[in-house]
Picture (cartoon, rainbow, N blue to C red):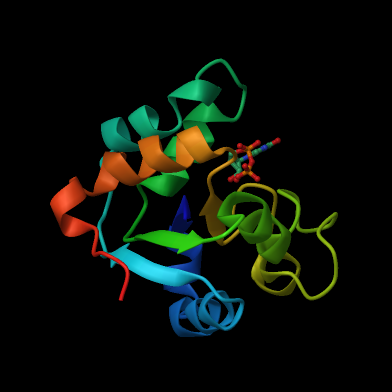
Length: 140
Ligand code: GDP
């Protein structure tokens, strides 16, 4: 079964949309395997987004991601990576298809409510960034 790491970002928590977004994720057939609420330090946010360290928005992005609690979640489903990215929509909510989570809830390209891994190998790596394997529950 494919694994993806979702993060309900600090804007999602501030807007009190955690329940609504989780409902959509579960209704789309994703299984929750691990979940917690955590406030990342600036250094942890920089580590998570290290692939973007040369981008002009890196400092703003990591300030935002460490600005308050977020909710990392390990999800499993067949085709989890592609299906989750379809559920959330394009990075920029202006470009996200109607009915996607980002289209419905996000304010900007930066504050876009939710993260989803972009490949199966990153899904595994990013899940391990937040959860040791023993905190990821097995199939029920
Ligand atoms: P994702 O895979 O859809 O999350 O998009 P990326 O991996 O390209 O970017 C990671 C995150 O950086 C996005 O989810 C946004 O929060 C942020 N981001 C991406 N592009 C921009 C941009 O042009 N400006 C700003 N301020 N933030 C951006």
